[in-house]
Amino acid sequence: MKPRNIIIDTDPGIDDAAAITIAVRNAALNVKLISTVAANVEVEKTTENALKLMEFLGADIPVARGCDAPLLKKLEPCPEIHGVSGMDGYDFPKVKRQPLRKHSVEAMREVIMDSDEKITLAALATHTNIAILLRMYPEVKEKIDEIVMMGGGLSGGNTNTVAEFNLYNDPHAAYMVFESGLPITMLGLDVTNKAILHKNTALKIRESGKEGDMLYSLFEHYRGGTFEEGLRIHDACVMAYMLRPELFKTEKMYVGMVTEGYAQGATVAGKVNPIAPGREPNVNVCVHVDEAAFEEWFAGEFCR
Ligand code: BDR
Ligand code: CA
Image: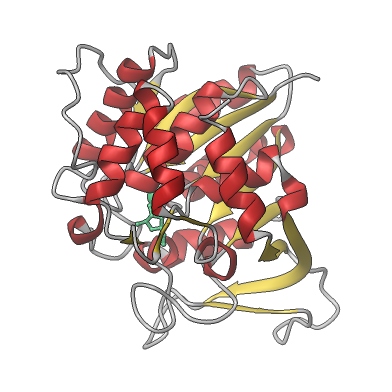
């Protein structure tokens, strides 16, 4: 089977690092570009982290630096989850590579327009770059087959009681993406909070080789859960969905974004659109994950 061509838009980020490592290693995915954005930490750091990963993995995939702040809000990074560098815990060799000399919005446009096949956007972060891409170059829409995103949720948040981090950081960009008319699959907290790794699995991954060892060291510093209760590797769900969609149950829903007020960053999702009745649902929402199968899949990506 032909590999699926993807662009990863990301803010590494420890769970991003796990997702990127899986994508780069799995021949079913052809990663054409890594586009970075400010979210977990500042964009200088997320770009450096993406370059470190490419070098470590020996991957010849270009990295393009994107936006350094959300569209309208001030950046509110979360070093308390991923560490000050955004990827604390592993001593990566000094990076010799450089990012592309163009903005990631330009780089995404070029990759998409130059590709013979349609491209999937794997959105692991705040949607600032993607919203600007769609607004500046709407012609790319014809050549995007799907946006598979980690973010939002049907009930509850993780940044506050209502909002998930990626969408909280740039709700206006997320609004533009949800309203874009493109096919979207959403992996929200309802599934990503359940897609967890336990310590025995993480230990097996550590023994699998240098990539597993690197990720284990990052996991030791990750504060998205604990080894005891299980680590929530949210962004890896995007790769799991692309590689093993049968692990998830999905439902078509209308998803709206709250862009202002106390509930800023929350998603309002349901089967009936209260704002424009009769309109088609805009998002394929993952509502269930087979937790045991997810953990087995994750381990299997390393322990082959
Ligand atoms: C999301 O927020 C970030 O901290 C993670 O990398 C993930 O993309 C989880 O809410
Ligand atoms: Ca992320």
